[in-house]
Image (cartoon, rainbow, N blue to C red):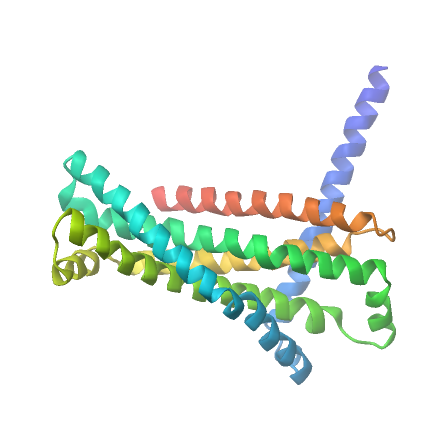
Length: 262
């Protein structure tokens, strides 16, 4: 009985390490292709353009509306709490840190994960089940250059650009609350933000958004490749991929907070 228990633990450990190694190997191959000029052939660029449109451009109306709503409400709450606890002098720093360093990239990654990552996971899983990926391999088409790389790069570009857009809209709409709640004119609000923002905040926004964008496409693609030959495996693949993706997003967020606190 004890021997079986030890064997089961050993099997699970080996399987976990093996899965981690395969995922790390797949990630390394994708990163290698990203820096190879030969990967950016005309077919890849065409797919990349379409993927950017689907991931980033198509979501702008909904994204803008949510940024305005969240901006006015959340920044209002932040200002109200800062005023209540006597932190008026730190309002600019608090707003910049919360909006640029934390909320904008994380919320953007969540929204793209719910809209685009599930679609990519389903698409790759269906192609895998239908043997379409094997067909492409027989025609000697590089799956990474043609299918995976455009989606990964589009995820990175989309999250970075939409995070910046979200931060700008959120900070702009936050002025409405300061105008009615604190009777603050626009020039004072603008100076408050400009004096508080630092290069570090922009670096954090850029690096974190790129990391979020990378995993929002890499994990769904890898999960779709792991789908078995049955159609019933497709929803399981999507579910597993989204769970792993959300874990990765929270891990990046926590790691970012730890690094910033050093």
